[in-house]
Length: 197
Image 1: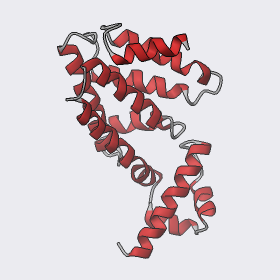
Image 2: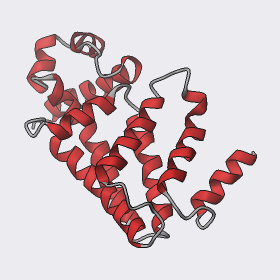
Image 3: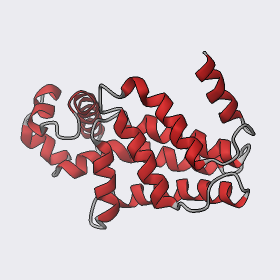
Image 4: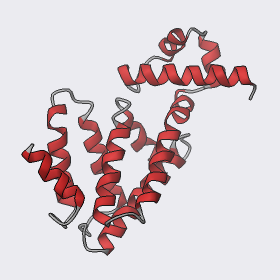
C-alpha cells in the first residue's frame, strides 16, 4: 500500500473509531466519510462494507486481548489471570457502543470478517478459564461460551447509562460467581479494597 493510501486509511480508521465511540456500531458510514473529509466512494474504496471497516477497526484490539491472555496463562495465579483478562475484555468491548452484539454475530457467522479474531479471542479466554478450573479456583460447570456470554453481558452494562454506576459492583458479583477461590488472590483483595473505599 502506498504511503498516501495508508495515511488516508489510517485517518479514516481514526475518525471511524471516534464516531463509533460516540454513536455506536450503527453509526452512518456517510457520516464517517463526511467527518473524515472524504467522499463516500473513497470510504468504500478502503472499506467496501461496514463489516470490513469494523474488522479493520477492531481486529487490533481483539488480537491484543488474545495476546494478553497468552501472557496471563503463565503469570500469577490462575484466578487472578482470569479476572484480569475479563476486566481487559470488558474495557475493550466498552470502547465501542454495541460491539458486543457484533462480536456474538461474528462468532456464529463463519463468513464474517471478524469471525477468526473473535473465535481466537474467545478461545484464549477459554484457556484461562480451563487453567483456573484445573487449579480448582473456578467453577467447572461453565465453558468458554458461557464465559464469553458473561463477559459480553458485563460489557453491555457500559452501553446502559442508568447502569454504569453499578458496573463495578456487578462485575464483582459475576466474578464471584465464576471464581471459587474467594479471598485467595490479588483480584479478591482489590475487590474488597474497592468495596471498603
